[in-house]
Image (cartoon, rainbow, N blue to C red; front, side, top):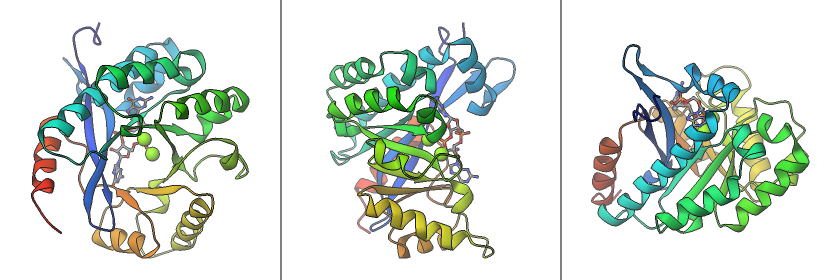
Length: 251
Ligand code: C2E
Ligand code: MG
Ligand code: MG
């Protein structure tokens, strides 16, 4: 009922290119504006939606809204054509639904090139059924869309699996990124970035919360960062204003 009533919306968080601090894309994050409980975060409903199967509908809604919004931004804010939108994909969408056709249809409907869309999947999702996942992901790549391995470093999968799936981007989990000046975090961070680069992948660091985090990531050769320092998840209108500002500023 909430889906029909339009209570599920998307928040957009900027993903910034560290070399010039400009917006490279946005990650679309689901929000549920519940009439009684207010705004709910995905932790509060995605898992339940996974269990009851509604995630397929929510996932499709997210794919559709995010690409429709991106097409608007590409036309109106003069945002550069490389601007992408990143959408989270659940295990049911990958394994039990026709993800490839969903991707094709949202791209065609909104007149977008494949590379405008990035799908984010966690290790645990692809590890549920590695053979099947690999096949589907190959087909997704044929549409031109790109694939990011989300929350990297938190799963249990073997590093060798990195080569078996056609990911082009690694998203380092925020637990390795925010620098509180202690422990082995910088060492792990450097190793993950090096590993990803050696495998020919780009790196997005999640959870950059300070200028210190951003500077450290840039120093380590990380291409992109996402985190409160560059912007919290925001409404489409706010993201639009940020893009317009970005387009008119030279850094
Ligand atoms: P995720 O894909 O890893 O998304 C990043 C999460 O980190 C977001 O939480 C974001 O708000 C948060 N974050 C961003 N920057 C910072 C920072 O600097 N510090 C800290 N502490 N946190 C930061 P959010 O929006 O609550 O989403 C949580 C998770 O829910 C997402 O993790 C994703 O796995 C899932 N999710 C969100 N939208 C969807 C969706 O449409 N479909 C599916 N299947 N899952 C979704
Ligand atoms: Mg994500
Ligand atoms: Mg993540």
